[in-house]
Length: 138
Ligand SMILES: [Zn+2]
Image 1: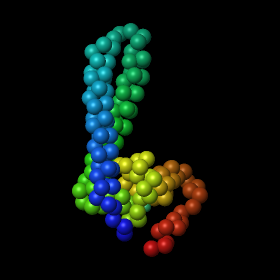
Image 2 (image 1 turned 180 degrees about the vertical axis):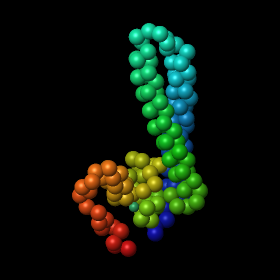
Image 3 (image 1 turned 135 degrees about the horizontal axis):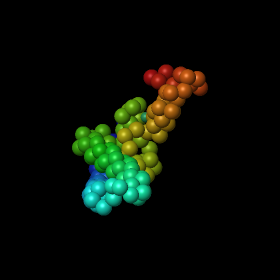
Image 4 (image 1 turned 90 degrees about the vertical axis):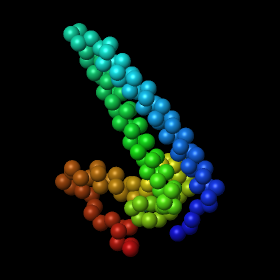
């Protein structure tokens, strides 16, 4: 396993911390917008549905940001542990390019694709394939 240069890790940490600040700021704004909607939305008029659509979108944005903050915090913990940049699923190195684009990512692209495919194929009875090549490799 290649270890990352300290200076390089520091860069990712700064990036992660600034993204976390952005996300936390946005969460604060979303929370006050949600509160404003609660106060302003008229209960007995036809506008109610507009209010609930707006609320739903705020709710979605809020949960997305919360998830992002959680992922960023987990990534910062991995930096502290010295496991940052290592895929949690296959223990392989996560390519730098991917870390540049998604510094909070916890797995390599291959493992993410496998996980997404498993999620997608779960409800359908005719899953296209059940053998996972990388699992046999070990
Ligand atoms: Zn992996």
